[in-house]
Image (tube, rainbow, N blue to C red; front, top):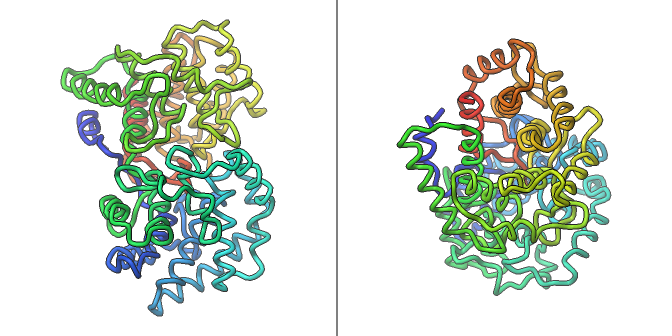
Length: 488
């Protein structure tokens, strides 16, 4: 576990786990870059799960397992030559059969919703797996109602060709080899050579759209670690603004900590675009209201300026959207925008504040908690509701606090998936400490018990609970949550 100084020094382009889904796309490059493909295949071989599937180790999430397992099996079928590769495909088939047996339940039992682009990517992977003879009868079970969801998503694009400014570029591989007409191929790449800062989209581009593209291959080589690649890279803005959001909950810093924080403030300020905001990476042309609102909040918290028009440009009739062409709204986006508007001086009666509060009431689960589409654990966004809503709706926060306390384990920790985690415990501890700091009661011993457990279980690795095209974990962001939860 890093100290605050070490964490602030380590923040750069982003620290994230490798994923099987993206690495499997790199493994397809055998005819183009044999070494990179071979190393990716090695990583795939070493990271098959015990049940034969691929995906997040600790947290079972249907959408993550489906795209990760299909992608890995397709790569092994294309490029695998060893007896071990064939055995892994056989084990993958058994796992996929088990996954598809539970497909109806899996598609509907993920309250945070599907992984990013699932309704676009999964049909393409299924079609390819069927052509290769990997699967025969499972396709319809895997897809379920996805065809309808895909139609909704494509209707949002209104016939536009996908380019680097349209968020669907992050899932460009969904076009496969049959639907490349959906893509504006000459305008997909970022200056760093990537397609949407996505390794899987970039590997697809370098394999099928512009085979052997040098800039794309150089990008993939630059982000590869131990043969694997992450779900997206770089994410220099996302990492900085979320770490600093956590640190902004604290009141006092040492001089060296303050100096490092100011250097990161400079970095964010220089990349802020008036009336537009910011995106998850400075190398990426896509902007979103989540990174924009979190960045604005930390800029204001640490005495910098950021125009409010950037956030208000995302306002819809009943909520704030995250991106253009969005299929469904995010609770997290709306609560983070609420936090930014709060620091900008918006009072409780402002129409934008009331809009978000009404949205939160409508999306709240019966027990007084929320889910968000960017994180699988309800403790993530429920704790953020407490932190950002205290000045606006005490009753909403009280319900969330009651739910958090009700679900604390006997050892003091929290864990939605049947086992305690440092990250979820940190979220709850942040909420409880800030609730108490604002003069509200917390039953005696509950915070102390949680703090003791967290201090003893703070070190990585951490379960993958953040949602992109698959599950992943952003290490420094998680550590900043733990650090501030203990320091508050």
